[in-house]
Image (tube, rainbow, N blue to C red; front, top):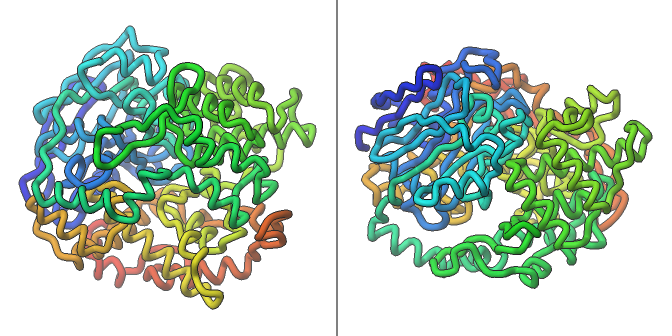
Length: 575
């Protein structure tokens, strides 16, 4: 492996220094999620305030960023202001590729401190510099990107500037987002308005160019070309796991009106129509165009009881420009609607009302009203502040996303044990469960969650596209060798497990043990409708699954990696 470096940016004095990555860290963690997590552990103290200058914000690439099949991706890693736990969030598109090209042999940009006035970090030729950005304050993601027509931009919108705890880092004018958990909130707190990448994308080795062609012809490549993640709306509705009207139902009568066919009908093209691997559907949103993905029609459509696709696209585009995570934004509005139904608010917020949703999303992004200010801290904090039941299920204060786990118990375990809070991207066993035999046991469910978490953890160290990277360790090792990294399939498999445990050490240090791996109360109440009507999860069954998961991981009953596990994974020096 080459002698990679990191760029360390100190915002207090606008200094940028370059330092080599320790050889042992390069070998154990490779890049992306793993390497950034190791620096986060080393560079922050236990209990660090996520919005303080002492927190670290890392922009991370891996050896495959911009080179592997599929869409280029980069990671933003920090301590989450929403959950207080580890946060890694990923975005694709042009910025990811140009950031990798701009960094040359650097794998991380580590940002610490804060600025008194908004600034921009310009990255090119393996170096970076800070510039003042007084004219950018208050601009949305599209406006900020337009200010740098000759570069690719990652930025915060008004939500990040106003400290909304689920603000995103928006790239490519809001077409892509490092979304969940509030990375944009940390970026805004540091006074960093944008990161501007001026380099060209890295060259793709011939071996990986061939792999890209094979991916486009493979089943997952054809699926992405046909539907991206938008088919998840129709799939979730068919199996009774579509969270509807604030998790009050598992099916939505308007699912077909906001699902894949509705998107195809409204589409004005694809994001990258001339490339082998297509991008997302582009649809009009009232202020231009937006690129909806599966979470948009689920959180802002079914979740809010809105069956008008044009209205859903407009809400999604608004979140994109403001720099708001669509899942948390939809959850915030759904919480308000349910609280309003209960008489807990002094204003009416109704399901099925896109105008009310639009107004409230703007209030959240700017903290412009008392209700918007409360919701800007997430539904868990809002419920406590308003003296209301939580109403929207969450894990580690992050709202549950796309699938109702009552219809697929393995998803409950996946959400509860996710390292960044409730997340369907760490493991998605519902898809395996949908085609599994009737005798699929809880032991099978535990094994599936562990397997998927390890595989995706490894992929995010490389850093490869989630979909092109749905691959066995043999393929990941072959791709690494194509870019000069000596790796075997066993190395890639061990990498995923090692980094999952590394992040667990960070979360345990921050107070997230077994109590944080909790089953939301709402999941113990039966689903009222659909194919999974009557389904619920008992705490006894969930606790037994969690015990089995900890045992499979080699963790104690409290969810702490044992000395034997740390030794086996070469993590003893970290602990």
